[in-house]
Image 1 (tube, rainbow, N blue to C red):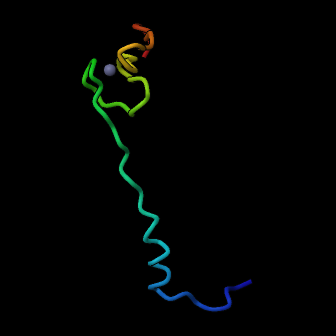
Image 2 (cartoon, rainbow, N blue to C red):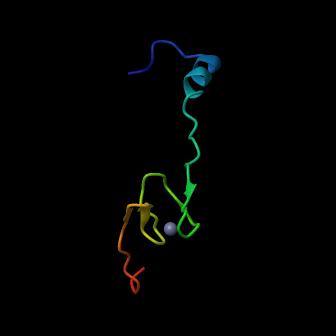
Length: 61
Ligand SMILES: [Zn+2]
């Protein structure tokens, strides 16, 4: 099956105007200063918020 009618360049470009990717938002960890995703534990030190921090293994990466 083929499309009934060709879509114009402008119609195609208007549709694709919403397809751009947004940059990933990072925040700085207040504990160690490395970048982390907001509302997630820090990969480096395990810090989540002042009440909660995950225990990180020291020998395994
Ligand atoms: Zn950290």
